[in-house]
Image 1 (cartoon, rainbow, N blue to C red):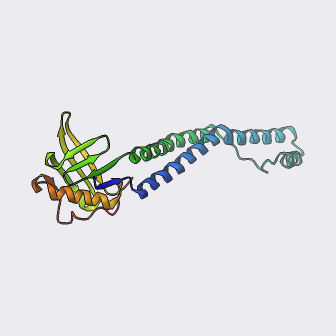
Image 2 (spheres, rainbow, N blue to C red; image 1 turned 45 degrees about the vertical axis):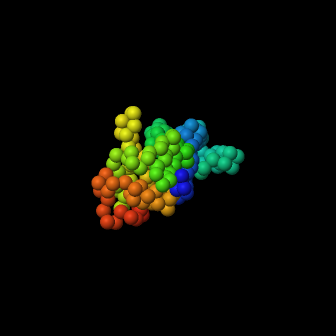
Image 3 (cartoon, helix red, strand yellow; image 1 turned 120 degrees about the horizontal axis):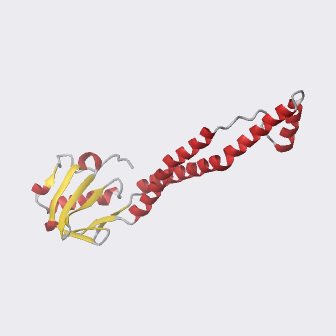
Length: 203
């Protein structure tokens, strides 16, 4: 197993940044929905009470409240919809952050490797080159993605080589080694530009 590719630093860092950003925003949404907006609404109700109870000099009375409690000069009203939108945003953003965080953990445990005769992957997968059934290399030239299929007792299985999610150089070398040691007829979709890996790929 002289060639081994683990999670690429750039891919891992992107996932971490997205996870941190979305989880922080999710926490902010919870704060606004449960504390921030209710507090603003409470201040606005006090503002209205001062106006109703002191019609002639409410501005002076409210100025005293502003000075004593640090209230805004003219509090904005907060509706139930304002609070509900925070929960809606949380419901959209939190799953994204959770998925990215889960992906960091999942991909940190994954790898693809090879020696002169065998392809290896996480979960104890070992695939001798002569047992590879087919290779889908149709996305290798522009995305650096190849799917290596093999048969076992559970049917057709697949090992993914992705030189954006895994370290690029060892991923490209692993693919080249497999390509050079299998029958060309089992490689599907590889064109003359297939020697190079991907430039970009989405999360």
